[in-house]
Image (cartoon, rainbow, N blue to C red; front, side, top):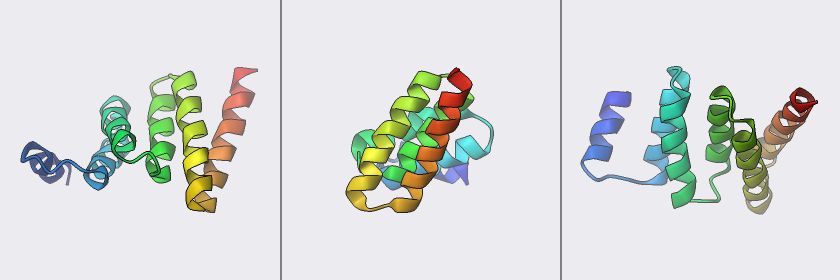
Length: 104
């Protein structure tokens, strides 16, 4: 799947859905650094994409970038609230609480 998505990107088919798919695919494959690149590009293209913010936070957390994860989830909460995406908002709230416990 990743190979076909990368081919689409190479052909210039750059859009938030494609970037989200690549980011999720790389995160699932255990490559959070590559995932973060695509997910960051996704939210640059569509800042209201709450699911992308959620995964971007996970990718940054997996890299040990806790400040980056916090920033992504806070931005994602704003996007989720604006879109009425309650589930993503709840999940990111839980992630932020867990992150705060780790920081203590």
